[in-house]
Length: 386
Ligand code: LLP
Picture 1 (cartoon, rainbow, N blue to C red):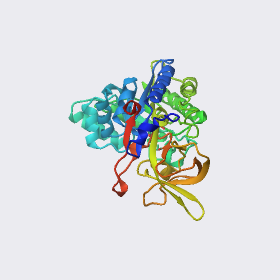
Picture 2 (picture 1 turned 120 degrees about the horizontal axis):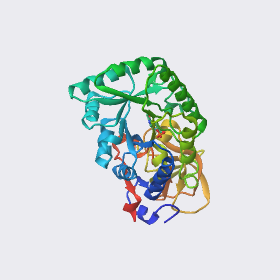
Picture 3 (picture 1 turned 60 degrees about the horizontal axis):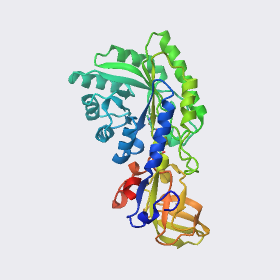
Picture 4 (picture 1 turned 180 degrees about the vertical axis):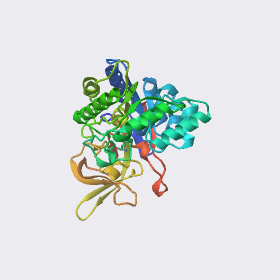
């Protein structure tokens, strides 16, 4: 066992694979529950898009969280893992008829609706199957988040949500429909947010919206503020559990909830990010003209975040403690963007050494592809490795 890894077992396991430290996952879930227990009416729905590995979903379900889904496949995966339908919320700008019917059929807690045409289709399909669908309207609050442009969602220019200027019209439409029940508002401003000021800005915007709607006697039963809390990619060991205390306190302090209102969160990355590592093996050390390359057997097909968002993941050679050498760490895929890191210091690498790419529990395994006809990486939890 080196550091946090069962290294001897890794040595006999086919690479690349994801390894999930389920003790850390359970501690993280405890930390979340300890915080939300302090507040009445705070509910966390795990954002399944971050990681839908059935073993991980099952542990999260056992901790009592609900599920936030963005496709019929995610609804099904959540139900299979044991989540009850009354804790499932369903968002997404492009829900297909089949997916809406699945949500209706399973009586999910709420559809987060993103446009008038979608609202009309839900009303019609609910009518056809004799149901009333609970809906929350996803409002685009035009609040920026200080994060990567590709993962900012709450600006007016983004495709997500209903414009604030159309909000009242859409609510009134929903209130008139027979087969939908308007329950509240939904927001999400972006992901990997570490500046609590961004969440405060969202709270302030929601407070204004609530005052405006109250003056028109529109009742809101539930508010869903989405997810977005970031993790410390630089220090996966030192800051292995995100600061949930400050996060929930920020909402408790700045969001003016009305009597009886429930507050819902959709956390993904902060739940699973730090518990996962991508374990890969050094195939070759290549001495180039100006730099040295460590070529590993994992590629952007296994973890696309560095190629897609220029995301930083801490990388470690977990096979030895030799002096460090500066390398570019690259995968075998035929794309020049298949690079995990440039000019980083690693303990000197040799063919066969094991490399851990840390903080890969969120948006890692789930975003893997089979480009170049590669196999999808396997995911193992700690219990399977001892
Ligand atoms: N709710 C909604 C409506 C969302 O769109 C998202 C993430 C979440 C909740 C969960 O956000 P989280 O707590 O995980 O930040 N693939 C990107 C991240 C995309 C996030 C998409 N939406 C990445 O690897 O950084």
